[in-house]
Length: 234
Image 1 (cartoon, rainbow, N blue to C red):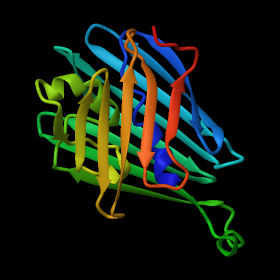
Image 2: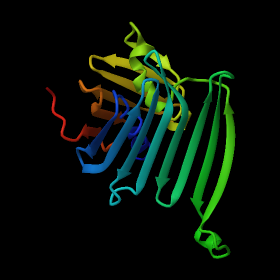
Image 3: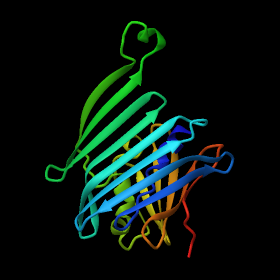
Image 4: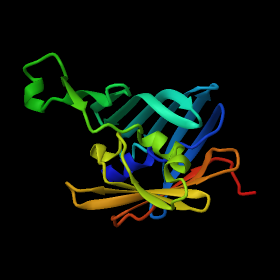
């Protein structure tokens, strides 16, 4: 379930202009399991995306926030900063990605706030252990999980399928295949460490906002359905 929930926020990203959309997240066996909001602001040559996801606490106390900031050049979205925040219960992990196009590197800063064990808490006034780390990614990619979908048409060109690189997917997995399906795009991610995979199918409405997402993964709980509130196909 954990990896499925982390997949949801990576897909609600295609848009045009300034906009706000709300989504209900559901599974056939469980019904509604959470909600998500997406806010977007663009100028002629810049963009800002903020997404927040909250799962139903009766099922899983999980909260995600994702932010992507950057420029738009010839219709291509180029991230300059990408922030991924994940809270599971009392534990929090925040990843900051800074893109350096001149040096072709990405600076990744990670802050973890992890709850202490019960015994450890008895000997300290602090209830969390905070750690910070830095990693310089030299395997440069000009896309984060949001711009992967925003730039799908540009990346694919005349092709219907290709391998792309990105940061921010599960464990920054690089083995990502991008497919075209009529008015939808699918990203398939293979997690080589856990030897499993999942796919995200994104359908875009005429106004540029996502109307439907299907997330498939090897799980007994089935497919996750993310539907835009109030949208009907016309």
